[in-house]
Amino acid sequence: MAMTLGRRNISGMLRRIICASAAHLSPNTEKSAFVSALTRFQSSTSIVYPASYVPPTSLSRPPWPELPPYSPEEEARRHQALVQKVNALIEEGQYGRLFAVVHFAARQWKVTNEDLILIENHLDAECGDRIRMEKVLLVGGSDFTLVGKPLLGRDLVQVQATVIEKTQSWPMVHMRFWKRHRFQKKRIIVQPQTVLRINTIHISPRLC
Image 1 (tube, one colour):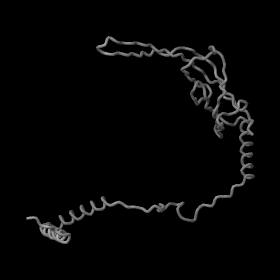
Image 2 (cartoon, rainbow, N blue to C red):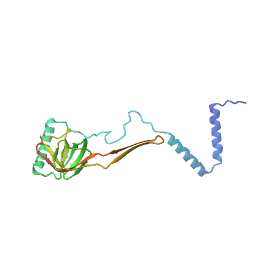
Image 3 (cartoon, rainbow, N blue to C red):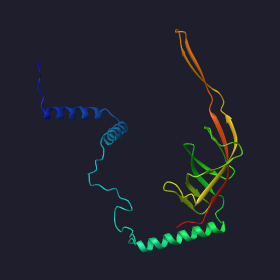
Image 4 (cartoon, rainbow, N blue to C red):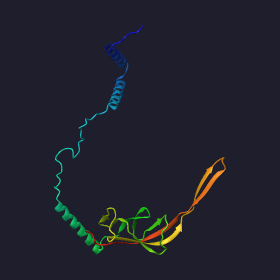
C-alpha cells in the first residue's frame, strides 16, 4: 500500500533516527561524527563576496600616498640633468664593459667585446673583413643603459665585427620511408655557416 509522507513526517522520522543512533554511540564517537559532519558542511559551503567587494590592502583605504603634481618644466629639467650626467660618463670613459643588443641575420644577439657568434647564413664578406652592425637596439654599461625606439642612431653607437671563419654545418640526413610500398627518399641538408668576432663597441657622447 502506498503511503504519502509530508515534509513534517519526513523531518520527524529523520530526527528519531538520529536520536536512536546517537544513543548507541559513545561520547568519543559522537564527537568524531560531529566533527566530520561539520567539516563536510564547511567544505561544501563557499564564501560569496558581493560585486562591490574590495580586498583590504594598503591601497584600499585611506590615507593614500600623495603623488606630486606633474610639471613639464620639472620633467624637462630632470631629463636634461640625466643627459648631461650620461654624456659626462661617456666622455670620461667611466662606463665599464659595454654590451649591446644587435639585430643581424634575422636574429637578435646580445654581444660584448671579443664575443663569437655563429650565423647560419652566408655572408658576402671574406675571412678577415671587418663589418659594422648598424641595427643596434640597446647599449649599456655599468651605470646606464640606452634603449632605441626601435634603433639607436648610427652616430651614437658603433658595433664592429670581423669575419674569422666561413664553413658548413654538419650534414643533416632527412629520410622519408613508406613501408611495404618500396618507397624511400633520402635528403642531406648542409647549411653555410659564418663565425664573427665582435671587436669593439664604441659609444659617442651625443645624447640630446
